[in-house]
Each structure stands twice: as structure tokens, then as C-alpha cells.
Image (cartoon, rainbow, N blue to C red; front, top):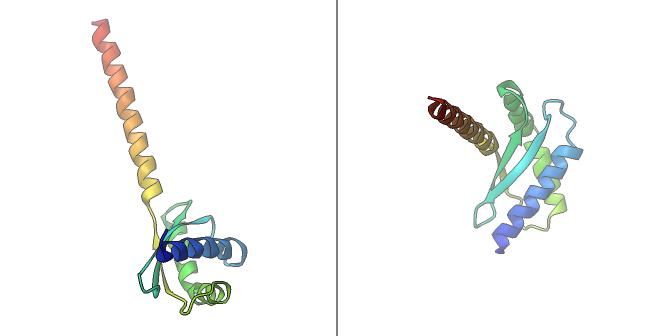
Length: 123
């Protein structure tokens, strides 16, 4: 594992802990930090998060993270031994929802295929 990957993983853990334990904003809701992508110079970190809820709750969670960005960055600077604390960009990760949607569509297609086969064998 490279230094960049190690720093990204440490950032993911720390930001996740901060969001779960230290943010008191009610807009945060059920946020999970999915992954962090960090530039090779360690100056910019894209933090991908997932939120359980509807579009309004996701939007409010994004707003809450954006407003807490400075606080989170300051805590990261205190906790991790980095020369520079990376700038943080929060991005909503919809890959989990996409996977669930694809899985449900595949299940419906399988059910329809079974139904059509059972109708074909009866005729």
C-alpha cells in the first residue's frame, strides 16, 4: 500500500469518526464515509459519502458537511501527522443506490422470465 493510499484510508477513518461522534448538526443524519481519493501531493482530498434517505435529506447532509468542513479539517490537522492538511471536497456517492437499483431490476427480470417460462410450458 502506497503512502497516498495509507493517508486516504486514515482520512476515511478519521472523518468517519468525526462525522459520527463530534458533529452535532441534525442535518447530518446517517452518513457513511465510503472512500477518500487524495492527490499525490496530499493537498486535496475528495471524500465520498453515502446517506440513507430521500433527496432532501441527502441535500441537507451535503450542506451540513460543507458547513462543518473547516471544523473537520482542523481536527484532521490535529490528529494526523501530516505536513499539510488537505483541502476537503465532499461528494455524494450514489454507487450503493445504483447497485441496489440494478439488483432489483435483475430480480424483476428473473421473475418475469420464470413467469413467461411457466406460461410457455402450460400451453
